[in-house]
Length: 210
Ligand code: ADP
Ligand code: ADP
Ligand code: ZN
Image (tube, rainbow, N blue to C red; front, side, top):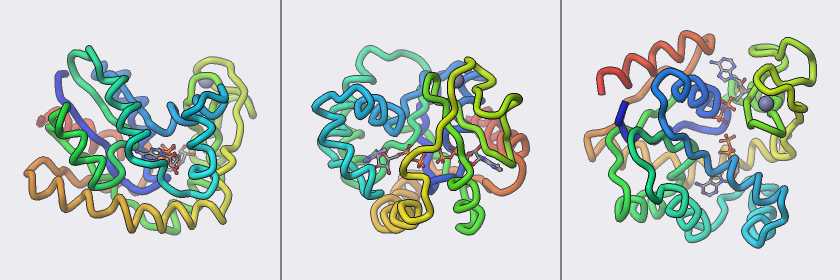
C-alpha cells in the first residue's frame, strides 16, 4: 500500500495502537515523533536535552526541531508512509508540504473523559514502543510486553495533570489541522470510540478505499 497518511487525533485517541496494526497489515513505514523524541531523551542527545522540558510540561517541542527530525527520517523512504503524531501544528503542516505530499489525513474522534482513562492507565514498552492498557488491552503477563518481552512502564507525561495540559495544547495548536486537511480534500474522520478491533476495522476500510 503506497499511501502517504498522517494520523491526527488527540492524545489517547489510539494513534499508536492503530499504527501498530496498520503497519502489520499494510507494511507502511511508520514514523512516530513521540517515540523518536522519547528515544532522544533516553539517550541524552542534544535534541533530547532540549525536548525534555517541553514534553514534561505537555507542550509542543519547537517546530524547527521536530521538522528537522521528520525530514531526516523521510529521506530516501519509498512506498507507503504513516506519520503518527506529526504534524501537530499548522506551521509543521506547512513545512511538511515542502518535502512530503499528504494523501490522506485520518482524524480519530474520541470523547475527552474516555481519553483520560485511556492515558492514565496506558503502559508502554521500553524496548519496542508497543502500547497496552491495564484494563482495555492488558499484556498477557503483567509488566511484560507481549511482542518483545521488554519491560512495560508508565510514561511520565501520562499523569492526570500533564494530560490536561496536553489536551489544552491539542485544542490550541493541533485541532486546527482538521480544518486545514478538510480544505485540502484529504480528511477522513473516523469514530475512535469502542473496542480497539472495531476502530481498526473502520480505519482499515478507509485506508483500503484510498
Ligand atoms: P500521544 O501519543 O499521547 O499523543 P506523543 O507520544 O505523540 O503523545 O507525544 C508526546 C510528546 O512529545 C508531546 O506531548 C510533545 O511534547 C512531543 N511531541 C510529539 N510529537 C510532536 C510534534 N509533532 N511536535 C511537537 N512536539 C511533539
Ligand atoms: P495515542 O497514540 O493517540 O496517544 P494510544 O494508541 O497510545 O493513543 O492509546 C492510548 C491508550 O488507550 C493505550 O493504553 C491503548 O492501549 C488504549 N486504547 C487505544 N485504543 C483504544 C480503544 N479503542 N479502546 C480502549 N482503549 C484503547
Ligand atoms: Zn515490546
